[in-house]
Length: 357
Image 1 (cartoon, rainbow, N blue to C red):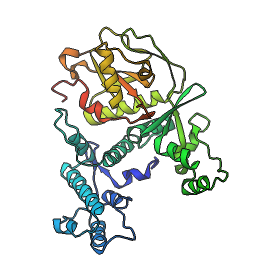
Image 2: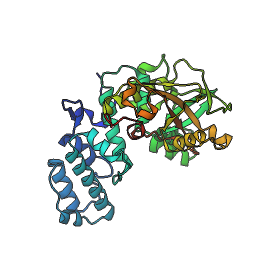
Image 3: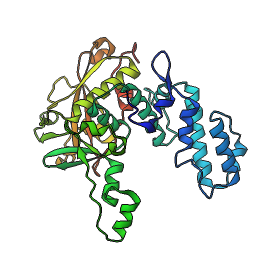
Image 4: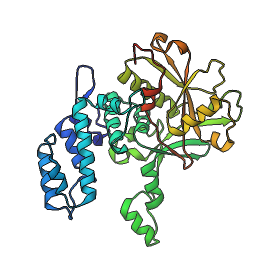
């Protein structure tokens, strides 16, 4: 078993009998060490005292006067957000219960913490699901649940790369501040290459230093045959879409306790199409328009990365009016070529029966 994402904090968490993750002081200390809360040279005495007190006892109560004493307004806001997150997490009791509380199925939820905290919670949960995995494709695909991806094409392949890493490469040649210095000086840039994950280099994925530099092949060949959806022809035997589908199955099983199968599909041409879930904001809007048979611009269709077909192992766990029918999923990049997958959509929008929901 490998701690393949040390930043997730998974090693500082334990499971309850249900297998859900229990927050700990060491887990909370990771947030205090992040750049948003870490001390800087300009930190005032009150901030230094509060930070030291929280590092010593991350669960300790913090009086309003302690926050008000911080001289920097941004620091006050950052600590207030952390404390709101911390108190909500400790009250929920597990990371999973807190996550579900952020996204209730009745639509009454209100997100009052930064998206970063949501992504960090999701990362720890996914790490727990894949703790024993030795499949580099699966673990790389799982990064899509909490790290935005930038989609590009190369030699006919549709490739998913870590947005933060891709943007750094574009700006600095992949060598950080030193690369930025060279770029500003118009000096030759070192050559640092991104790699497409394949069977020949999968072993290198586990080397922490280069992990996010691996691109995931999500290749489909897109046709414009729109009888009641899109035609998508898979052309890669080792497409990362299959690995992503497997991760999403585990995600649903872990939270909802139900078994589903998810597989990439070549097309949605189904008179029984009764339900769909977008895995991101853009895919939700596109699937809604296709379902309602509205005209969709060709350039918008081209931004669809993948379709999936989800089927319940037990139709009794579905709403009676759609029991036994497939659920179609969509994954789409936005106009800037970025995919931000929202795994919470699967927990909120699946057609569950009352006995499951």
